[in-house]
Length: 281
Image 1 (tube, rainbow, N blue to C red):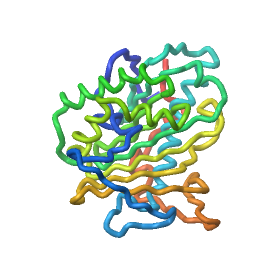
Image 2 (tube, rainbow, N blue to C red):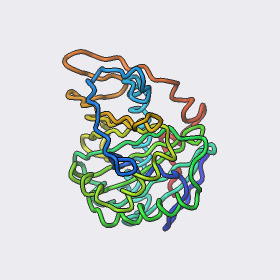
Image 3 (tube, rainbow, N blue to C red):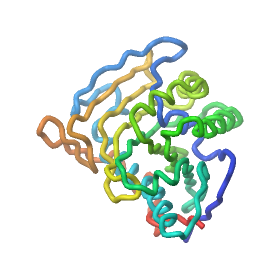
């Protein structure tokens, strides 16, 4: 194994502010409501590249890539190779790129049932707020997972250029509404996100059979925020027939989704076996 795993009990400064938006809806900035633009499944916004349908071709494989970390951990737990306690945190690195998983409800994750997911992608600014402020917010958010039993797990992975990918697995769509009521979360979304990101996109979807199975992520909806626009541009896109892999099916037609940039440019050209077998001890 190339990675080094650490079992942690406290917060880790891995995903910067990414965890603040995994189950979020930044609907206002400085108290001003941002009404969403409704995008068709195959619609492209010329002035907002962050909402290009072509991004599905990269985002979905990356979400499945991160889901595999949780799958390996839960399969090892089911086989008795590792013991997991509720809200146990794992941190490790793969070729210098950090990874993080918090297992909130290991007993439920060991069973086969359909789960919901939220995937977060943010285009980080070169300069942002201080790390101490981010650490404090992230610590409080991770601790709040204990107050929301519908959240089953949280995972993050570092990409190149200090970019991060987040994945939350949860039981029911109502879990997202409950999480939005968090004051810590609301502060992070409304005040900190515009300072840290050029743009954000948040995917909602599901996985049939859950992490213990072998099905891929299916996306149903994506929300976008372009913080470089004045006023902030907010849009939403429903995918009535779902998005799987690198193809989006909309209104009976197949929409090809060629990724912007190659997947190996976002992660690592030689990630080795750590992609499929993270070094959980």
